[in-house]
Length: 77
Image (cartoon, rainbow, N blue to C red; front, side, top):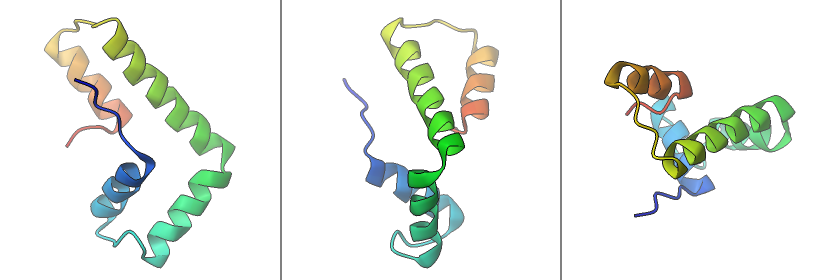
């Protein structure tokens, strides 16, 4: 089962965690920043590559290492 995430879902997640509506000025500013910031784009690209690698190679990490990776990537729900 594929777990593809759309940009809208990412924005909803970010804004939900900020307690903001998707069309709020804060979320619009975040989206604009993400669209124009090479550092953020690089960070999110690295997260994407790491997740793809993790899925593709079915990496079997000990629970502690897995939890540290999820925490580091900011993917903990």
